[in-house]
Length: 158
Image (cartoon, rainbow, N blue to C red; front, side):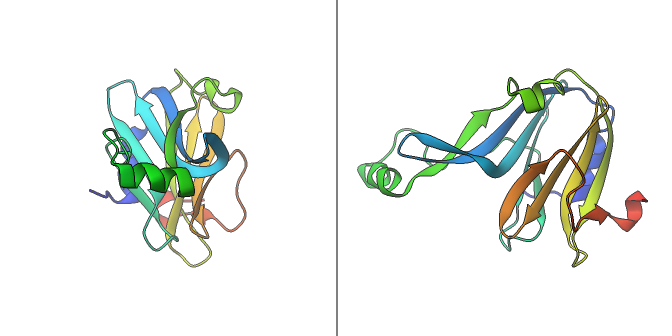
């Protein structure tokens, strides 16, 4: 069940334990780049960030991503995956971009709006590093600098 993006503010003060992304995979090759984000916290909670069905808003869940192609896989689904690919969870905690965040406290969380005023992203300050997760053009992006076209929600100040 989707939560309002403001629910992410509850992450402030918690320690980040692990990070994963959901990337597209085809023919056994991961297309790292655009994809949803999972945050695992030291209190055992998990937050899943993705784009909403309209491709323009942030969707938040307090549960990990569920792979729709979990085993056992039917012959029909196996053929579909071989031909078309699928989304796959990829651990990112050891990736140099994310590894410096692991074990650090989330100092602040700001919900972001896009140029149309839609809640379409979030800015995390973790251990002195800024991580920006935004939804734009039906794709999910992680940025390490302020992405163009996004600003803090009016309730989050400048």
